[in-house]
Image (cartoon, rainbow, N blue to C red):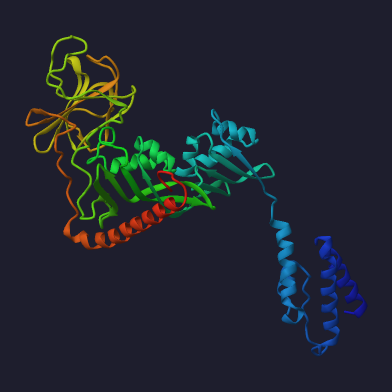
Length: 463
């Protein structure tokens, strides 16, 4: 083929190929073509009789040019061309779920079809969970040309579901963020109630409740608390992105009540069971909770000679009445088996529960009995069995609570409660190591806090 014809042929091919390229790459592509042409002239050629193949200048051809043509530059051009060709602009939009919102309504407001919604919720078990969206949660939509490419369902600050479109389906990834946990310390002296004194030093109500629960088998926080009692504890606080998002568990605590010291350390054994123990490894938990309801006051105590408020006659009151708002949950005071659950004479809605060692507890005047509580049901300590009410002979909402041993009524506030099982011997060594560290930290922080308090102001407690 004559040189002029060959040049004409190459020129025609080049013009057709270059038209497919974005304008901003034309100069670079033309430069490469010139380099190829010069190499064909300068480099030694085979004898005139040898056959030579011609390759049109396409994207694939650019990617396979000889190393002498600077492959790194060629790769950059090819990648850029492919990215511009294949990438699709995506726009993100965040929606905070409001009361009354449904998934269907939200998708409709985003102009997304019912088919898209169906494909999303039917793609997986996680997709079906979208039907349970709640106010204050959020949905983040990634939209492209009116189609849903991605969706983020943010359940909490720590948990979210990420859906990504793959053809006609949506793949899902569960994302769990782990907060940073820090140890905090607080110490205080009681001048009025535990809750007011704890509130003054910044202890959250949740942890004040937990503190009362830890020592609740040995201390009656409604009747036994005195001025100048003190508390000292180490607890967890959780942070995410540098901001506090909540509180964890109490790790170690000390409470001085009427001059007697009580200490507790949180410990998880080798089987994963967690509880609070004394420094000697004895469980602080008793076999029974002293008070099975969060009450506001004791409306009637254990009194063999009480005058009945309705019948106005002397009738023994062999129980303790805990006044509480209607609907307050009532908890089983110990592990046991339901003996009777239903309506009975003046007790109204009542539950009888049998426990080991011939102990029976009775819970009367319930507004209603918890679903599933019936004769023969096995119940764990702390499990909700009903709710405070005024059924039967009752003048106001309260729980009538009886504690019987071998059929004989005992005063629930004074009866000696059996201890729970201590740690087995195999757990003592690791428990002792943890206990030494936690109690040393507790005492060190307390001493530091008290010194700071004395050298500073005259406040009764310091965080």
